[in-house]
Length: 268
Image 1 (spheres, rainbow, N blue to C red):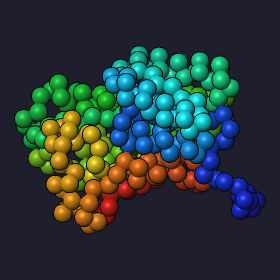
Image 2: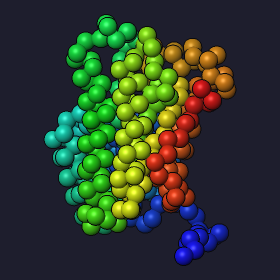
Image 3: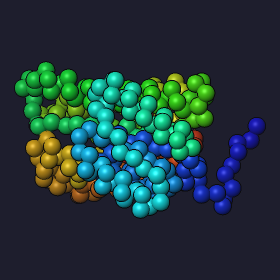
């Protein structure tokens, strides 16, 4: 049977009417940039955030100005119960506003100060795995329960945020962070194959050195530009450049793409 082709006049980058996208870690950086671009593509948006309510609400105000519905909901993705409450709130918003959850951007993540593994505390290691890996697993599980045709859903797309550190290992800096991102790559491939016949696509974006606030949280606010000489393009990336890849993978334009890990690294 021949494949169904989109007519040339169909804007395949636009979300279907009534589509809701949940972005974790949406109050700043790549998450906020993804929210703005997604709104321009017609997505309604829920921003999940851990603690900075003011920053999340500021992004929501920007999204409203773009003509879409948007909400900020607090949740610590490392807490399984909190993730369950977050998705219950999303269910309520969908029911009240005639929306369908069709997208998840698993963006929430943490990094820590540069250390060798033999200097890292157990508390640090547990936090890294809980936020960066378990948080993505919890959120993807809840999304599949709502999107998959096996559960009565109408399909959707999940994009996990990985990191080039997962390929490079980040020795002497944060091998713990790199390990969680390597696991995200493997998780993306496995889940994509698991739900491929259920209307759910799963992909990942693997950013390189991006000029966002996350470096300051690791005690190295100038790190992105300090590493520029190691990048073939001789500069760090911008959050918008990563967001473009995320929004494309969420869109119908990527309808035959699943199990992919897309590098946005400036060649690094």
